[in-house]
Image (cartoon, rainbow, N blue to C red):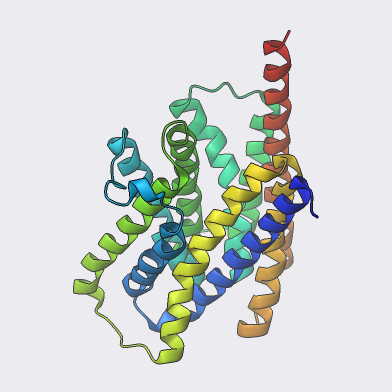
Length: 294
C-alpha cells in the first residue's frame, strides 16, 4: 500500500508524462489550424471533469459566487494556451519547455500587484537569474530576432495570472468548476477561429490524436491537483522538470532537434531560479505557520 507522499509522487509523474505527450501532439498537429486543435482541447478536456461533478450539481453546475474572477482566469488562460500552441509549432520542443519553466518568476512579480505580497531580496535575485536564463535561451538581437520566442513568455505571463486567480478561486469554488469553465471557454473561442482559419477534415487516426490533446490535458490537470492534495509540495514539484528531459527526447526522435549549449545553460538558470523562488515560498509559509501557533 502506497503512502500519501508516494501516491502524490506517482500522480505528479503521470501528470508530467501526460502534459509532455500533449505537447508532442500539439507540435505534430501543425497541418491543422490552431483553432481546430483548441476545439478538441476544450471539448475532450471536459470529459474527465464531467465525472467529478457531484450528483446534486448536474442541473446547476454553472452556478458560481465569483463569475468575474472566473472570467479573468479564463481570459488569461486562453491567452496562455494560444501562445503555447503557437510556440510549440514554431520553436524546438526543448526550447519552449525550458522557457515555460520561468512561470514562477512572473508569478512572483504579479503577486506583488494582485496579492499585495512582499518579495524579499532572495526572490528578487532569483527573478533576475531567471530573466538572464530566458535571455540566454532566446538570444535576442536585431540581426536574428525571432518573435516566436515571445510566445512562451506570453504563456508564462498568462499562466502566472492563472495561478494567482486559481489561488483566489479555490477558497470558494470547487476544482472541477474552475476546470470546466476553462474548457468551455476554450471551445467557445475555437468557434470564432473557424471562420478565419477554417476546418481540416481529420482521418480517424488524426481524430484520435486530436482528441487526446483534450483528454490528456484534462487528466494532467486533475492528476496535478491530486498530487498537491496528497503529497508535500516540496517533494513532488521538482518532478515537473522531467518535462525538459521528455522534450529533449521527443524533439530528437521526431524532429531531429538537438538543444544547443545555450538552451541547456539558459534552462539550468531558469530552473535554478524557479527552485529558489519555490523553496523560499515554502520557507516563508513555514515561518508564518510557526508564528501563528506561538
